[in-house]
Length: 157
Image (tube, rainbow, N blue to C red):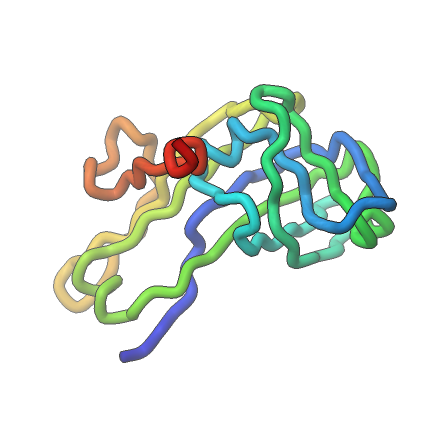
């Protein structure tokens, strides 16, 4: 079977609130934002700095809920500064045939200037015969089977 990598979660245009050079690594993210898109602690994420073009790979650790924190930790702090606008996204590997048969969804939070959820979207790939249709919809209009329910808070209880 052919494997493909698809976006699973995205935090769009969040603002870096802190940098911590003398830290083991990672990115600290408001746990509310992590839950909204389904990011797990230690899951690999890509971070693209819209402000300066740098791109890194790291893992998130949960920060204080509803704090808006996005703190770049460790050596990567040399590439980011407070106020930078970033995209944070995660991928998952799927069987292409399963995606063609069952579809796929990704959760997206578009952030406001305070790193609060301004808009929440579910981006879907829906099977349509031999093709796939793409849509970016609000959760209310998405088919219920596209929404992943688990969050890391639920996993840890």
